[in-house]
Length: 86
Image 1 (spheres, rainbow, N blue to C red):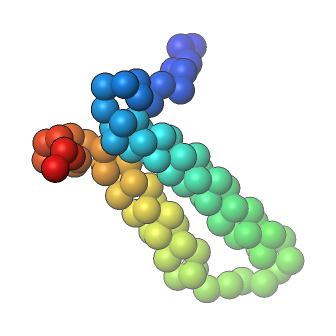
Image 2: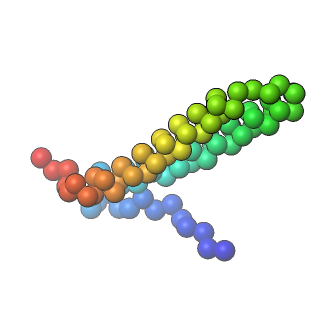
């Protein structure tokens, strides 16, 4: 199995792209952690026998995945708009 190494790009060429690459990696890691936390909360509530509101967990999952999509697409959007020089 091939594993991809952490490589957000070089700092010398485009510092904004480098920063957005790190943001995308961190947002992906935070999204995975958020999904694990919401799943753990659901499992613990089910184990206790307390059936909770499904909409609460669904809303949390939508917010987590939406935030990941927004943060991950920031880099390509900025590169599409052109350089950030004034």
